[in-house]
Image (cartoon, rainbow, N blue to C red; front, top):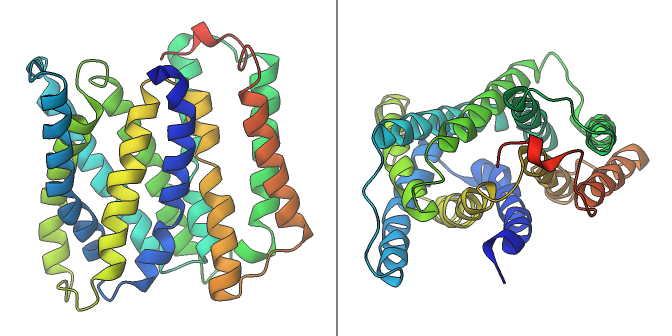
Length: 296
């Protein structure tokens, strides 16, 4: 099976792995920014080993980083660190479902960026998919993720995380065609951990006593989740990437219902169905609109 055919299953699997992140952040016994640091720090040696294995499998003939490539990856790493810091702070200040939903505004910002760069209007199918996804998100928010005065700060932090996450993807776009995905993610993770270290160390007790949430967060979210997403994003249009990210809120809402009593009503269940329909629509033959108008 070619990488292009593997891209959508990989993106879907990566989104599923990432969906468990909010629960693990809440389960950790360190402050939110510290959990973001440990997520990246624990993942660093694993990603480095995987990148080395991939290079060896390719014959050890990897080309050096392109000119300006290290700076672009460093910028992506810092942006991803900002995304994690903001998101983790938002997770502990709002509901589980809302944290996943609001932070995934990248689902809409990425397609908008793609169409803006291509200087083209989205096709009818693209518009229909986005409208269905937007309606699904609105229904999913429902009663289990109401925006309130108590949760307002958490929601705003998650919005900032979504913007930083979109910028992270855009920064990666400059180098993902010339740098292997695992090597790209490994280097970006190093820079992200370095950016988070002083903030985590100065933000209160940052050495954990309960390691399992952080280890699972590092392996499930950073290695598996981000690894699959970074691989897939190089083979999919931004619209497909953005819509597939909407799997995360649906799963997070389900976890919130069973783990924290955030029960799903008919509106939330209907929202999940609309998101699923949007995902199917975006995968129909011909995909969405004119695929060639969206940068790959």
